[in-house]
Length: 321
Image (cartoon, rainbow, N blue to C red):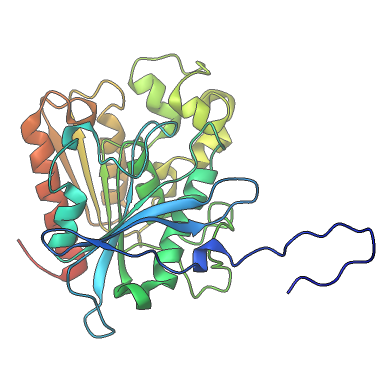
């Protein structure tokens, strides 16, 4: 109840409950029984729209004994475009979508919106991704999800964030304070496995690898950082997955096209080499004719989904191909 005010003093209503603990919306059910909860708020930001995700849950509700693993999916778009509704143009109109296919196979999916570079600069995007993982872990019992089996998967800019999720759990600067509080340590933002498609893994070198001007302030990575990477080397290093590699990182699957004109496959090659050198279980597969977003290689788009599902089933469900 709002407390009484003195005469002549205007009153404001008290804030409502935090959106990350709001009741879940009703689910719609697909023809195959997958339950879809759309537009679920996972964090509230003062003065900004709530951050939302879409949940794709396997048909059979999980219990404490039968809880299912989950994947946080992060969309691409150069950190400045895109939304949780797209897995990439290669899959536009595909039914069932790759996300629904994964849910049908017994792995829940949370497709996440995060702040774009026009709204906030790095590390806001990673703070949001970590908040989504913590939210999923906090709400796991009511969703039937196993909080110990959560992975990250992303394409392009989302792949960059997925890699950082795998490499920076608990980082004092990169953890952030968005959404569900994880400061006490019981709600970690760690993930058990990572899949990254054509991701920028060495932010400082993206422009040079693509043959662009490293001092161009209009590049996607410059807009992410708030300045060209060469002008803010410390911030670029902080934003680069390759700079956070450590021996206890989770297994990673890196997929990239050799013909990628926007994010050179050298980005994934260098990260893979660093992971292997650190003793991390990393896999790299390159597609000869594939450009960014698998353009020019329909077979690559289909194969990438198959490899992704196989990898996630292996590391989250213990199923061997």
